[in-house]
Image (cartoon, rainbow, N blue to C red; front, side, top):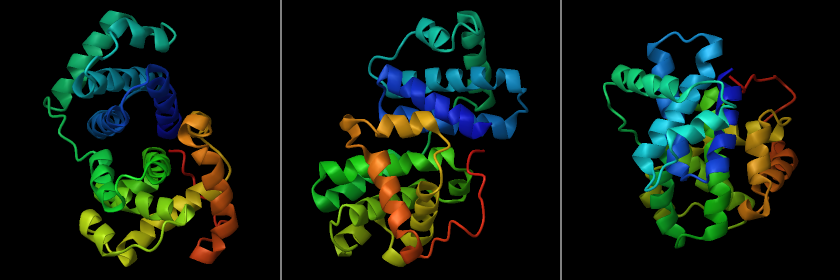
Length: 236
């Protein structure tokens, strides 16, 4: 259910044209809240829309009003319910929204290649995989960001993981490989998260989801990823 919720949040995030940082913070809020409270299934969407509402107010210069979040949830909740949920979520988190956002790490690593637009666009797509697949939860945001940049550069044939990239990422090539392989594993399997795939299939994002999946299917075995051996439930 978590994967379905996050996929929907990506759709909401895209519709409102919010910053990447807002999406990552929203999912972090959801995960932290769900680790502290038991939530009934019929309230899960309320938690998600409230988390995005909170994250937008924290990250955006101009954030959408509560009425827009009510509307995007198909009027399943009233504005007052969202505002009450906002207070409850923030109280549960002790009003602490501090979070090592992976976008900040990706931005730092991008210094090593002079902020190459194509590399960073593909890396953003790869970075968002970590929001949908529970297997990435055991890795630090900085580690996932390094792996996203590593795989993006490999797909675009941008050269080796050199000393500058090690310096700005704080990860060697060997350290990046486990997360890199998880990303390939996700990409090489059938699409489970339609909103996420559709978002990055657009020209705006260089059709990154289409090209990345094609690349992964061609190259998975060469990088030690056997997608035939087991079936992972990466939708949780």
